[in-house]
Length: 51
Image (cartoon, rainbow, N blue to C red; front, side, top):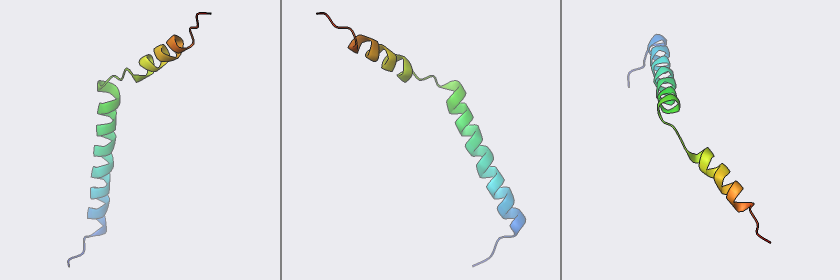
């Protein structure tokens, strides 16, 4: 089983880290989630009581 040189491990590690950050930034900046708004509306609607 051949061994990999340390510089190749470092470049492979950096490639995975950069792709991870790129993927997370694309998800964070390009996809908008409406979960917070629906959660706040649910709490407001839940607290209305008619006595």
